[in-house]
Length: 299
Image 1 (cartoon, rainbow, N blue to C red):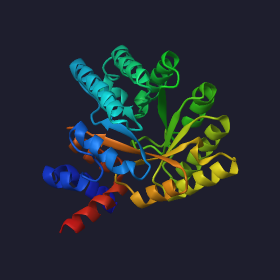
Image 2: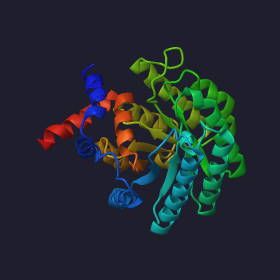
Image 3: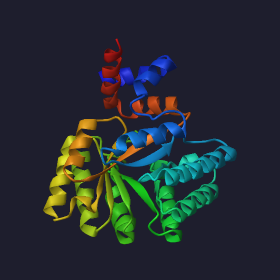
Image 4: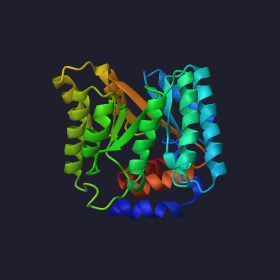
């Protein structure tokens, strides 16, 4: 309750203060900031995915502008020689306006990524977009095999069915996360242990089927459970990868890398950093502790 109360006050804080507190979790407002951050973490052995902040646009011109920006990001990644792909939210590309527009812009980005030997992660948002997002990624995969993947959320009750009907038969490249959007009880598990249990259940199904999985979590219980499952199945540490947000639990990140596992750091950047910071805090109040620690350190 305390975390939730503080999180709800974040939009009322001075923008400068929120910027100070979020600087560890967001690379900065421009692409140069993201490139610099990636180079700083390369020495640890990290891989990366970059996200231009922004979603739920209201005009076609905005979607096309974001599309052009992602083409520039892919070119810069290639020029810098980084092991880095991109993650894109469908509503940022106009899914809420016109699915055909979204498919067109994504198609241009994935085609360009494929020409550079790179990869595009189709991000997952809240449940009104779940089916549309899965269909979007499946169509892109048919056009450019091996150059796209999708995100699935362990807290959704439907995800186990989606695995059986869509993900497993197609051997889709998946990022598995808990999920952070607020969903009603009939659609999502709200109990922490139920979410953890379903996460590991889904992960087992994916690994046993041979899907490549990005295990996206900062939950130490799930990290340990995933490592035990990888060992139980006799898989090499490189058969999948762990994924973590920039600036969150860096000691755990280094521990995972030291054990020989691949790890990809999610690097968000862009002018929409303030909206991203406040939204993530509202959706996941546990992150408030990181901000509060930063506040105490500052003073």
